[in-house]
Figure 1 (cartoon, helix red, strand yellow):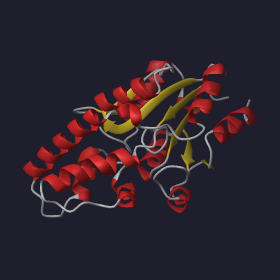
Figure 2 (cartoon, helix red, strand yellow):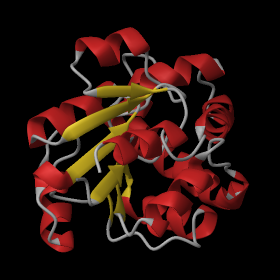
Figure 3 (cartoon, helix red, strand yellow):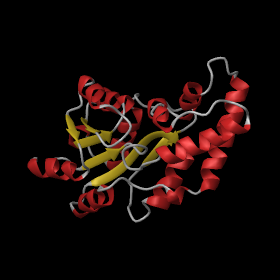
Length: 218
């Protein structure tokens, strides 16, 4: 029986691609850098904001410029209004059902920690997440499994009763590195073939399929 579900955020719970592309491209245009297509950003996300910037900017961009632009993008991201970011279809219904079943829910993301908390409170504020863990100074990002271990300690629920759900390579590797049952969601930014190759224990096309799976294991 599973008693805890940990979710990635961008591309899993929230459809942030439009916001990511818009904010980055506005800052790039302002500083004379080429803008990138929305679909390109799907291949840039997943390993934290700095990695995204390094992938989106020209290869010879210096560290100081990357840091400056990253701050501007994050400021713009905040100003644009995170409340306009939609959850994917079926997410709220799935979360409602998990809460109804008294299954603990948490978030583990490579998004900056304060923005992860802001997104969760603004968009998914009706839900109580046992833990929301993002990119924190001195803490390793996914695919390191440290966040899974931390959440397991906080919830008191062992890893063999935990599911991790994500859409990207880093998510599947995190689950595998942590020894938890790992679900790849196909509505996000990742590719089905890659998630299969990485060894996702289950692939789902719609959030409510997670509920169907949990029911089958009761």
